[in-house]
Image 1 (cartoon, rainbow, N blue to C red):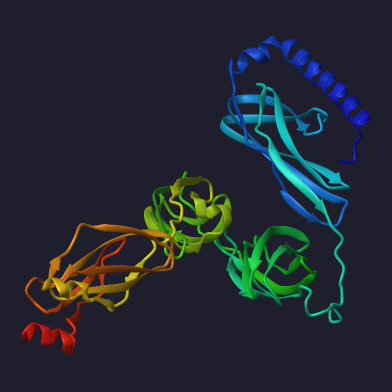
Image 2 (cartoon, one colour; image 1 turned 30 degrees about the vertical axis):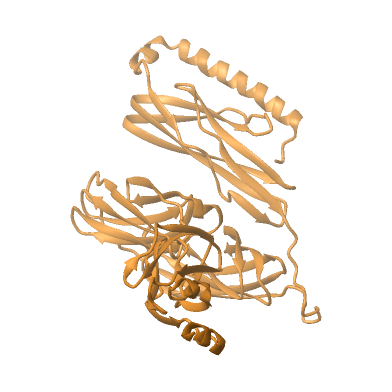
Length: 479
């Protein structure tokens, strides 16, 4: 930030003096103190940075804001200060607040950063009650962006091109939380790459991500206008190569917006998630409700990342089923996570979250070839039996698995269930002996698989005959 450690120490000392004066002033007016509630309920929201993950040129100006909610009757003095991640504190600020019921006071602090930083801010309320907010985290990534002519690069090096457009490029209508302009971009690479990119709308970074691009991929971000204006969104690719394109848009806001009913509340409920294990995608649906006429906007997020949004105008109290279309999961998200639906009305908001199941790899499937005869064993013919016959079939699996199967001879199961470990293709064999008092062995053979899936080779007919005795053997028998 601009202030150094010494200045912050002086500011902290000044803050203590201001707070002491404020407490002394309150103690000096017993009649006024008696008129106030003994305890004023105070709560503080987590500070938010105007650009939580800043990427761009430095120095960078970041504004931190938080809301203090007080439930009071009469009037009070709000005293607060900012706590910084480097251990310093801002000077104490005071605000006079009066009225009955719940009052909200939004406070902010602007800071300038000249180098890379990961830090946090807290808001500490000192009066009428001491309350400290949760830490609001942020980061600053200073980069130098410049145009580079890459037409001379070797073809083996990674090249990136981008195109961007706004939809709609011209918007005329009500500028409510549900109104949105989508900026869509296409990133193309000459070979598969991890691409780091960001969206900059009117000079402010609104989205920053890193995605895998095989040939080309669409990326998008939504923008809700609040007033009539013209603007520009820039899609900037930061690595593996620099590239950028701009999308221009125009907004004309109508003056009238639907007037919400007094004290209209919104509600999100009945969230159900579903995981498609074959495609590793997740979907969800939930119900959005309102107690009166209002314009309601909702936002879907998966593991904290916004993936979809929508809006609807309710002319009276009612509810609406909203859905999240199948969304592909990548990286750690494949292992499961949380889907959240946040809804926003004019004066109220709500959210609901539900976990989703991790993707499961499809179970390996097994197929089996037809059975073939691989050999004939004639030694049994000497024992006045038909010849033995040997068979072979090939088991093929789409992945490592245990295959359970059995053989069927002449329509009857020939043995107990067998098991083999298969990963790819594996030959399995079987054989039968000859029948007593016969010179021919014939019939049908089949291999039946019972798991991981049921399948069969189909029946194969076989016929084997003992060879005729040699002429000398016949003569001996005649004698």
